[in-house]
Structure formats: C-alpha cells, structure tokens
Image 1 (cartoon, rainbow, N blue to C red):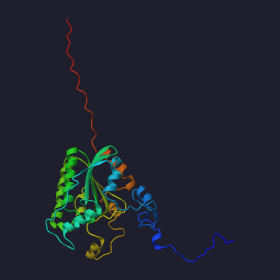
Image 2: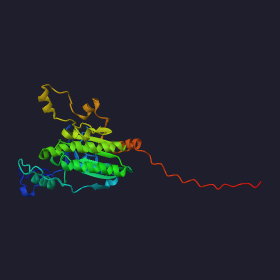
Image 3: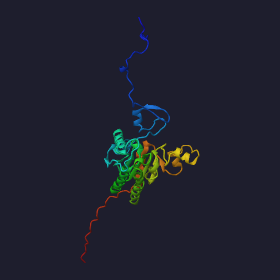
Image 4: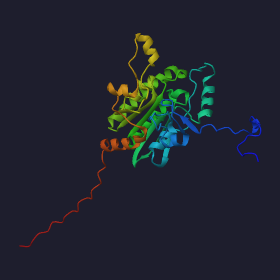
Length: 301
C-alpha cells in the first residue's frame, strides 16, 4: 500500500491556464516599515499603517468620507473643467492630457469642493487630489476654491482647505500663478467676516500652493510626516551648496520652526476639528420671546 504523502510524479504539471494568481490589491506593504497587511485592514485604519502609523496618500473621496457625517455632502461646481488658453503642447496637447487624466481618475480637476455636516457642525471643505496632474493648481482649482469661500461666507460656515499639490500648473503658466492672489484675496474677505479658516497640509504640499492659501489659515495643521515646502530639497541643496538638516521640510520640522499650529493623526482628525470649531464658532443665542406689555392699572382713591 502506497503512503498518502508520497509523490508519484515529480515536478508540477499544472497547465498555465489553470494556475490561479493572487488578485492584485489584496495586500498593502508599508513603504516606511515594510509591514504587510491586508488592504481591507489598511482601509479600515484610514489608510495609515497599523505598525508605524505611516500616512498613505489619499484623495478627496477618502477625506470626504472621513469628515462628513455618514459621507453625506453636496458637491459644489462639480462640472468645471480647464480650458486651453495658451494652446500648450508638451509631449501631448494640454486638452488631450486633461481628457486622459479625467478618464483615468474620474475627476474633473485637481480639487473638489463640498459642504455638509461634520459631527453636526456645518462646514465647507475644499480638498485637492494629487492623482490629477500632481494636484497642480490651475485656473479651475483657483476658481473652485474661490467659489467655495464665497459659499462659506454666504452660509456663515467655517471653511477648510485640504492641500496636496506639486505646485502651480505649468500648462497654464501665468493663469496658474494668478490663482495665488485670487484665492488669497478671497480668504481676506472670509477673515473680515470673522469666519474661521482651517488649512490642513498633507503629503506633499509644495510650490505656489504653499506660497498662498495653504499657509494662510487661522489654524495651519498637518498630517504626520507630510512634505511641506516651496522648492524641493534637491533644488535648495544645489542652490545653497550645503547639506540640509535631517527631516528637512517634514511636518515635524515645520512645526518645530513655528509654521504649524499642530500635527494631527488622520484617525483623530474629525474629532479634533470638531473640538476646535466648537471653541471658535460663535454660539447662536436663542431668540427670546418678546416681553408682554403690561397694562397700567390705577387704584381709585
């Protein structure tokens, strides 16, 4: 009688078409600590590493799901798309690049704006998407942020900006750079009306975005480990001819040097923002009832 564990034929003879491959997207490997966990567990942990708390890049879809109650919100100006004012061509014409990126990402441009409730508190949020041409700031980005600020002013709600960008969009040149002044002017109007502006800087926040609305918050906050700066470390190193400090331009470095108010873990973000807004937003005083008019009475003498 042959033992059950003995291999009769040597080698593996499974035909290629019958081999089963592990489906893509089931596992996540942390780029920081190299820990491997399931994608389901990674998403449940809000795309942060369960071992070292490394914050993976996410987009507007994920941030809106984290911040808005039950992921319910109303999107603003969802159909705005870029034109081609300069007839720009690099490896391909700019309109073709926009169309290809729209098809690939399902996004219309590098920012989405929306309003809804966050733990019961009304709020207007603009969130950038790095997947759309590196989160570059073009005319549509500036226009949508400006309109979102106008919405916050009209509805008397706090405004939050979530930045994630490689800087100004080169395909729009001067039109892109003008968005720095445009959004800054709108934020000045928001400030005049004493409505809070919270700026959340995520990885990476660089270039013209850092030089404008990203650093103009009443509260400038960041996620752990985010790259924050104007020019890249390599450019700065070649310009000054010196080695840069360790962790230069990380959120922790920027906080230490006074350019941030605090760093907040993504898992605590919603509650931290709620607590912050409860402190700074004016309380609505209930309308008191009009006092009843008392009719004068006189005693007969």
